[in-house]
Image (cartoon, rainbow, N blue to C red):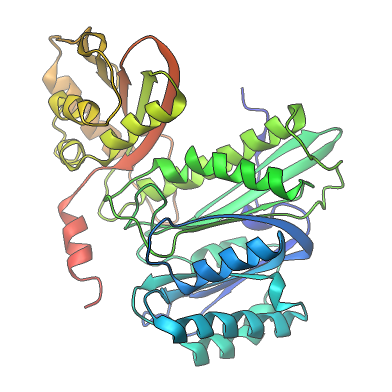
Length: 419
């Protein structure tokens, strides 16, 4: 039983945060494209970023800021231009963006963090961004989470947000989050942005450790298409406005807070995977029996990322051989005679031996799951995935990964991305 409950409010549910999202004219579509998240006070800040050798200016900027100072007050995010592979001028654009929003908020530019998303190789439309800042600041609101979530998306079909609440001592503590992502999604990390707010007081080193572990169990365990981006950013703020005692080392309260942080990240990660470009269903891969958790996650991510597995799921084909092949090439040693494969409730392989199963019923399971997990407008369904369960032995290691099926529409969307 989870030691928390879901609440409304998204990124602004924790105390002491406001947010806004506006249309500044950065996107040619005319949709919202500039978002701001603001803490009323200086907040402890942590981040996890892309491992790509080609990094957007905002990623380099945030890394430098967080190395110099483990706190921030504002996160500014533009959608429409990735400002990646834009050279020295892209770096100056990032600096100018931070200075402009800092002046409007009357805070130091060192207290501003940045994120960008959009087409690689395109600089931010600075005139539009700077012209939009006065309206952005004016519209900051304690109920602004939904507008901010809308302003950070690109090819997403739906927005992604969540807020949870638990109790530390005798006081409520909240964590909220919003995210974007639909394509170029693969571990370490993906074309995704995620912003987390928390009103607990946590030491900088511990907050960074918590976020890194939560990222490994969420955003680094999803895949849509095997492509890692230049802009991936996960930024988390903790401002202490819950007025609970500071958490400075691991213990029961820290474990409770980290578990809730992980749950927020996993919800957002699954929502991203479910909204994969052209996807019709979410896939959850559960792996057990390895020597440790990282090994289990490695197998799970290999299966979730297999184009053959993903294509079979889209075709509602219960071809468990695809799952076996992906398991075997994951780079984790195991004895073949210990392998077990389940698709939903259908046991297909046990002790390394194939079993008879109702293929028509298994196909119907895939069809029904896809139908039940369809995405209506403004939905972020993550509660009805196709379940693949794999056991490779008797070890204590267990891990999960999430992905989506691979449809014809994925090719169509990405073939026309800039045209």
